[in-house]
Amino acid sequence: MMKRTFLFLIGLAASLTLQAQIQVSVHETAQDQPVIPAEIYGQFSEHLGRCIYEGIWVGPDSSIPNVDGYRKDVVQALQDLKVPVLRWPGGCFADEYHWMDGIGPRENRPKLVNNNWGSTVEDNSFGTHEFLNLCELIGAEPYISGNVGSGSVEELAKWVEYMTAENGSMAELRARNGREKPWKVKYLGIGNETWGCGGDMTAQYYSDVYKRYALYSRNHGGNRLFKVACGASDYDYEWTRTLMKNAASKMDGLSLHYYTVGNWNHKGSATDFTPEEYFNTLAKAVDIDEVLTNHEAIMNAYDPQRRVALLLDEWGTWFDVEPGYNPGHLFQQNTMRDAMVAAFSLNIFQKHTARLKMANIAQIVNVLQAMILTKGSQMVLTPTYHVFRMFNVHQEATYVPSEYRCGAIVSSEGRLMDDFSACVSRNAEGVLHVSLANPRLDKPVTVELAFDQLKPKAVSGEILKADRINAYNDFDKAPEVAPATFTGAKISGKKVKFILPAASVVVLEVK
Image (cartoon, rainbow, N blue to C red; front, side, top):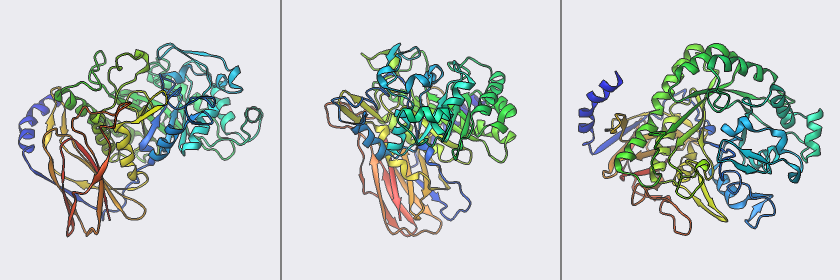
């Protein structure tokens, strides 16, 4: 049925792309709209490649400038990004991680072979204290992934107690290791990808396992856990149905993983790609809209009050590893194509926040669609970083409904996507922010924002674009992709009009 629909729409798509102007009707007077959770801009850090070691943690004795072992340049970049929540220690790594190995004097911690990611030997110098102190340093809420695959109920229960209890034996152990006051830990993931690397379980079996682990992961003192059950991969709607049927009353959230991968056997280069491959990638990314809608419909059937949140706690592009790097370290460059994926994805997420309460891009440094890349003492900010920084004005703002008619693109793989993206929000001061993206490589579009009642007094903005879609920022050279001031928007009565260049991302502030 879906394939027939695509074939039917090809002719329509071709005609729509000829239009020269898009009018976005902004309904700023709409009432009772959801607030966009800051956690939609969440991040993910796994013990994988150089994400933790070198990417975030270099140790206090490193020649790389650091604050108590954390890279100064990366910490500053993450503070500027306003990271709301950070997931750790995995990923697949989480279900082989035993937290007791990562506490106490660093010189006494046992070494660990990372069997999931390149058989790297890790020294456990970055553990619970280092992670939770990092979250405090950058102002992020910690999101702990508990070990269900190779761990025990007792191990996870004691970890929760170690982190959050004010007294008792675990609190005393924490104090001996240098932290008397408990941390605040809200988010607890009970397992990761339990259908695969986290235990190879069925949904029926895991739903019972989840309830057992959740029961013994207790609240201590004033800390209140938000317990997240391991959800589905991509289009596995039956997993969501089984978990909601069997365990919805015992969970606060249900996770979902969705990666933009064209072919798992040949993912393609992150930097060397054709226009056809570009549109295939972007169309696969925006398919998340339908995926979210379908999972939400199942959750609505079992939880019409929307008490259980949906958390997309792994998402992003996944390409072939850069030449010369360990294949298990998943290091890939980051181009303007990734920026476009980020812009379209974030605009989609913000329209789903009645149920979707968190999204965590994979990953924060040096892995997959990273915010930051490092090489020794050097650091670069990726195009994706710039999109996240530009878009963070939507965090904790009220969603403002809007509507528009645009053209369509049919990828060579048969996926249909809009050739335009926009989202609007209003912050606590009443200022409107509009995030827009034009994916077309050769066609600018004239955009007109039409407000219900607002007569704008001032408009300003930023634009992210590059000379070519595969432009990226690399070490030892000036950035090829960086935001610039956008001055093209003009006010006329209740309208704002401007030209959105080809292959560009713009964020406007309207007062």
